[in-house]
Length: 394
Ligand SMILES: [Mg+2]
Image 1: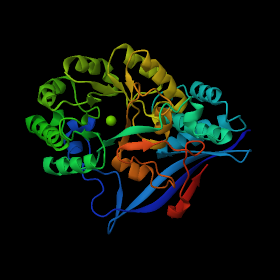
Image 2: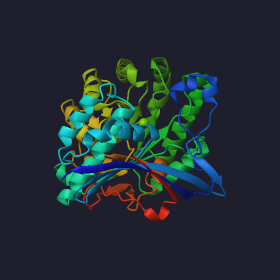
Image 3: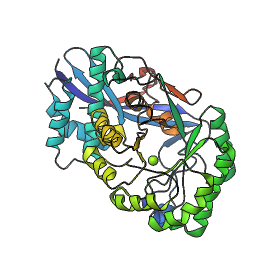
């Protein structure tokens, strides 16, 4: 089998969603500047009348055996990197030789160890695993040595919902009633918001904890927007609400600060969503920056690389719970890891509505649990019926 073509499908469609899709956004590192702090959520184009423009780019790797590997969605810059940096390296190659092809791409992209180039390698690696699964007529988790179980608990990741205490409490109760035994909420305030922001953050956590009760897990995401001093201020205020973890309390380049924060706070710290490859994660593990490691399969190097990262993490007794860009890829990988190493999977409620919009077989938790897909490969298929317009990039 040989790779004959690589293309990116830039799809457009319309999502019906009554009301405001993005009610709120998360705090961002750049929010220390007032003009950035004032910006609202801006992730989607509204078409009015409860309709939103959907755009997504999917990657297709075609072979002379009639098998096509599908992955995505990816961003525009990643699609550009796929086509301009890597497609030429993969043409005419054996798609089953995923280790070889990963290493060739990695050694060719010497400036691409992190960021868009590594995200491009990641998406191509996922498409190659999709080919491998279709070729073997087996779900990818089977080829990875799983399944270690037949379903995976999911936590509801609540990015984009209002963080006003009353609204958040109501939403938290709604998702607890759907069967989720764990939720993650995102802070909107950070060091630029002063003492009033501290109080807003605490009010959110108090409201959600009271809404879901003492037994469900509550995770809290700082999205790289805190610093050591702010974490020291927040920690004693959050401790009474027993967070399961706080996530990414500082910028990725400040891993030593994250390690200090971990030692300073009385609850676990999760980290690594914006780190890349086995080499980046090894550094995080060596300095003890976290209790929970969160590589994103579509960013950190693909399925091939995230397996290696998980293996490294297992030698440190650090839990691996991948960031949830792709529910499909994450389910396949998680289902091949021991449940103590990966006990739960992230399900970003709003991002999945977008990321899975063009997919025919959506992978969604039911009663807070993801049942493993059974189709060969990753189980991705474009629902052509919702594609209104398309540009093929190649
Ligand atoms: Mg996060």
